[in-house]
Length: 428
Image 1 (cartoon, rainbow, N blue to C red):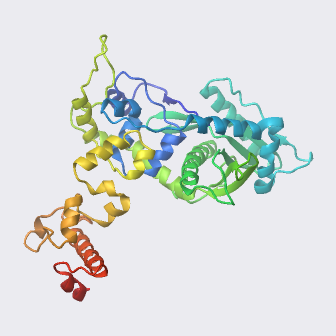
Image 2: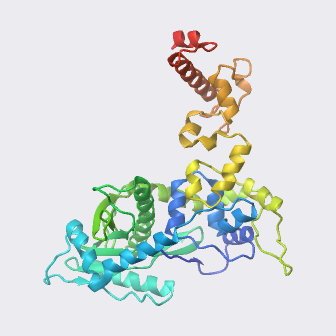
Image 3: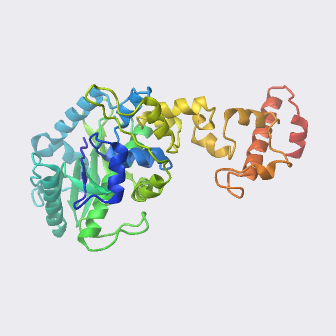
């Protein structure tokens, strides 16, 4: 479970916050949570998602208005299974949860060092809960010999001019430091779990680690370390290895695995820094761009589908097939990539290898040796990074040569000669 609410920072509205509110229109601000922040980290190059999430736009409603609703989301069966598994772990004073905590964190099994579980006021509002969590964490960190379990604490994280409230499943505090504990319902079969699900859980846990790092640095009156791979050993600071607790095999007995989230933490920090500098992206938007989803008294939309489409297309996207499972606009971006014959629809790996070759037709032409890049017009081909950039004519030539050579090798393997195959083979 993770819950969050975006609350504007105190004081009068700043120009950036005002501009983001104008982009969103009168619709309620969509809250950022750990899942959405983790999805941002999974595709850090997408300006479109950064702008929409910073503005708090409801991307599900926007995708529906664009005619490409996203038919995905957390399964209600998975949610129910997760809630049942977590309730069993925390029944009888967290008896089942203590087993993996003892095995991996060294929580004592006797009464000489009892596990303290302070009341975090779960029925209160997020701001009150966050204050109570900060107090409980400070007390627990001040006693290095004590073992403390914070059950569903509430953390703060500043994101693009707003405060996001994040709720991890648990924190274990000992020796002045804390460890994030995430409870997931996907099984660990024969000692291994689905890598995609583990990766998603690691990115989500990295958001909690970052929030705790900010809190510990602020409490100590110090800036956050510049190097995301450096642990600041401050009172209450988190370890960068989190603990995932999952069902073992097909039963309900828990098992746990420690996951190092430093790489995910570095990616999350980079993406959130892009959102902090969101003003640069907003300055590049054409006048009149907004994502107003409101309707008038008669139920007619304030902005037509064509106007919304133009606003969305004004913000560059970094589509890849992975977006279909992580972003509500994934199906819209896929349709646009297909209509434009863009190579992005083939995946990030292919897109990176093709340099400034932007369409599938160009890639096929290059593979057949019929590409348009020759010595006469190489100087006129500018990639998105300019004539001297990595995606300029040199990159196009190199990608075209690789494609043509690969096509020649494939033709040779299949016993079919293609034009230029002998020359390419000899030159290689």
